[in-house]
Length: 195
Image 1 (spheres, rainbow, N blue to C red):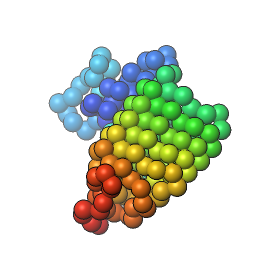
Image 2: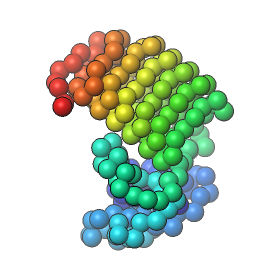
Image 3: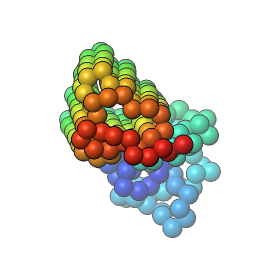
């Protein structure tokens, strides 16, 4: 397996790959000052090959890189995560330590389901989404492409969050949230348009 991106997020994915006894060949990064990370060589992006996981936390950067490469993408799930056999998970997606993904969940490509997140039955998570640590998505929640759900947020059953929005850390989302907004608080309110 190869990783694209050699910073903090890559360190966590390295831990996941090690926990699964997967071989890590190298990482790729454009920062010429970085030559290794946790003992693995860091090569320049002109040498990219797969299978590859994009180990960058930014949703829009992950999308740009994924759409610019013609390689096979891997995915990896920490062995402490609990994932229903009735779940579909797209290429490039990583599931961190202690996450729980229940039955009939659909997760897109190049997503991050972070540490201790809980994704309940029938949720739909589109491509390039980041569900931050200790979030709770109750049943039948929908998260649009590229949206970032901040740490510790709770989204109640049946709520739809639009694409490329940001839900602030610790928010409680009780109503639908449109595309391209920053929404925060308990109860979550829109405070800024991001488009």
